[in-house]
Image 1 (cartoon, helix red, strand yellow):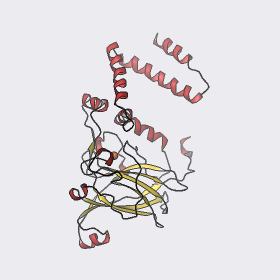
Image 2 (cartoon, protein in one colour):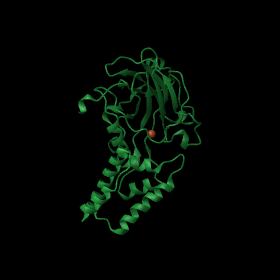
Image 3 (cartoon, rainbow, N blue to C red):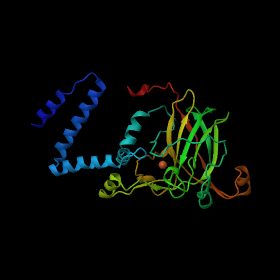
Image 4 (cartoon, protein in one colour):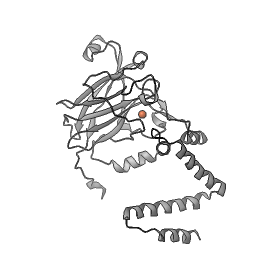
Length: 291
Ligand SMILES: [Fe+2]
């Protein structure tokens, strides 16, 4: 009897780490439930194990195919969701993704695009404020920003970009404000040459992520925030391959081309204005409502 088998397996779980016992007990129970529901053939069971072996072979110090699989199945966002509940008004978090690397400190207003994409792409001015959940500005907050270029590539994937291109560390001033000049990012496919891509193809899914900026914000006294800012109008907003889109993270780009706009933002050519405020939760916030 399957119940007896599961009971026997669970009875063997011991050790002095109660959290590990809880995790393995639940995982084992769900795996046995999966088998009872799906009734895999032995060939299917072995194909599943071999798929995981092959996934491991795709991993390198710069690439984690398991994270890609986790993203594609919504698992990363599910883990993010259970770990980042916060007070009303907090900007939602979103997955970090695999392309973060150290960014150079830059002045407010700096151009962060220094590769050939700057000649090709539409320019952008990105600005806003870092605030608490009551709307009070947070001076001295550090924004660690990274984005892909107009062809959807990060500096680490693209020989035409120097390290640090389209990345910046910015520190907010007394008014909590930040701004920088860049290019409009592009939607891009997740890597499709490994097992992640194989799975997407097999289940009839596209690999695209909607255009976005990444940001990780830290400020004394506040909980760190890692999130995305997405561009309204992107055709992949409703089918992000990584399931990272949240309505509160979508900003409407506004075309700016008047003399006054160019002067105000120190621009030479028409550009898209992206305005987005971030709201941080206090570091000591406790989820009193979730009892
Ligand atoms: Fe990204």
